[in-house]
Amino acid sequence: YEEHEVAPDGVLRHGQTVDLETYSNDDEEFGGYENRKKMERKLLWKTDARFAIMIIIYILNYIDRNNVPAARHQGLEDDLELGYDNRYETVLSILYAGYIVPSNGIVSLISRPSLYIGGAMAIWGVISCLTGITQNYVGILLTRLFLGFVEAAFLPGAIFLLSKWYKKDELGLRITLLYCGNLLSNAFGNLIAAGIINGMEGKLGHRAWRWLFYIEGALTIFVAVCAVFVLPDFPETERFLSPLERKLAIRRMAEDAGQVDTVMDKHEVLRGMKMALLDYRVWWLSLTLFGMVIGLSFNIYFPTLTEEMGFEGTQALLMCAPPWIFATIVAFPWSVSSDRFQERTFHILVSN
Image 1 (cartoon, rainbow, N blue to C red):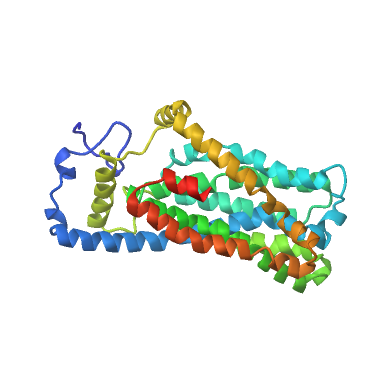
Image 2 (image 1 turned 90 degrees about the horizontal axis):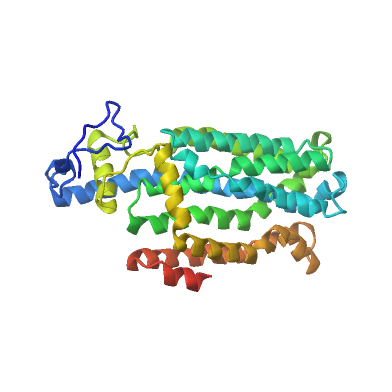
């Protein structure tokens, strides 16, 4: 351990740490071991309450990217002439070209990830609204492409931010709760779409599928504004914590990591990227995720598949929900088990 002074603004910059005594195992400044545990429980409750909005953000993240399949047979495909030359499939696929952006490298360089995530969310909400006014194939192609670029900011940024607040034995459950936003959006996104489509056809002279983009985009913008004020930033700079709680938040993460955490500069980000690229385990996990995503690719065609099975209209959208509700129920005990036994590989293998 090296001894350096903390920066005047309280943020631990690259190459800086605090005196070793500050991060000793002595809990006297927190009122002893038992009182520290009480403070930790209160700290986790406050942090969990702030991060709960992440679930809503992830629900809207998936709803905004998956509303095209819900709108397909409600007039979108015919109005925009997407029924030939693989146009519809191209509209679905081009979204993911933007997801290659290494957003976690960007969010690690800024001091206000809440502003970064909230701002990105507001922009993709605007893009979703603009999708509703498109008049042709090129228009929806461009909106989907830019939607992918902006939505790419959320998930890696969210996981990075969670890792700054939760210890290893706490992180699995929180990431599962975050992913429940994904599962719930798949389950209920189509139900929401069904309600909008059934009630808005012809309102103010607009087709129901256009209202689907207007309403869901506007809701996204509203939640984005809330997220800027609700989401926490980093333990070193967070204002909703008392000075003692801030010390405890920093101490917890330092003890868990074996070193004091720092705000990374661009050189640290590049060094971390190099380490990840040279680590074979990262490539194995990437290959696992690649296979899982291929297996889930049916999702963007789920409403079409249920229609092929004989269900029509709203009923076809409703039949998309049960598999995702079941997945949400199973995810909780599985993540609790993974955290409890501090084991990941077996749980990943079995779940895949």
